[in-house]
Amino acid sequence: MRIGFFDSGLGGLLVMEHCIKQKPHHEYVFLGDTKYLPYGPRSTEEIIEYSFPCITFLLEHQQCDLVIIACNTISVRAVKQFQEKYPQYRDMVIGIDIPTLSYLRNIDSEEVLTISTIQTKESGRYSSFSKEVIAMPGLVELIENSQKETAMHMCDDVLAHHHEIANLFLGCTHYLWLCDDLKEKYPDIHIIRQDEIVCELIPDIQKDKFNVEYFLTSHIDEYIKKYQKDFKLVFIPR
Image (tube, rainbow, N blue to C red):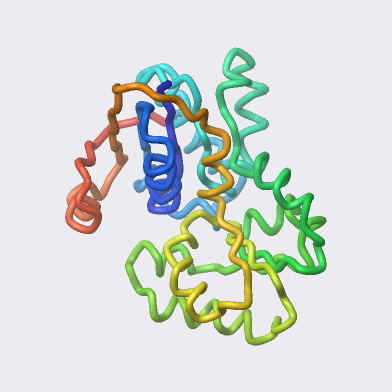
């Protein structure tokens, strides 16, 4: 099975890497739209304009059997519109919010604090499943620039006012980069991770074939140096 993962940058890469470790017997393709990163502060119109060609690239040029939108912002603002415009791909494109909502339904919303991008918060997608959804503008940029200390300070400021929370839902896949540090600093809080949730969507098969490809729309040298992956630059007309 050939599976595509799409995000603006690091978040989707982290999700895919987790899936590769757990379900290695597939072909994986990552596309990061680093040219327009981050998507969180953008308008819905911009998100649709930038994301549609990327999803199409994975489906048509990379021949993916399944495309996982490993970005909450794109999932809540563009997946439904993409499926309506391209009904032939309806069952081949899954927003990360769908399996996440199924997971959250089994948890008392009063015990869940969600942190997310501005667009994800404003969509209201996770509001009914959380005591509160808090937007974290600027956190994605800090993570992309490897500024972990400052990024953790942002999380500390939020958690300082929510001592009673039992579950912290990372409502942006970029935030997975902070997961180990958050678990160490807040051992009594359960971290809800979307990489683990998404991995359950992928069938567990046994075969010899395995391949991984990485594509970016810009900043390729920076990402190769930072993450030691064989990223390839791709031009996607908008």
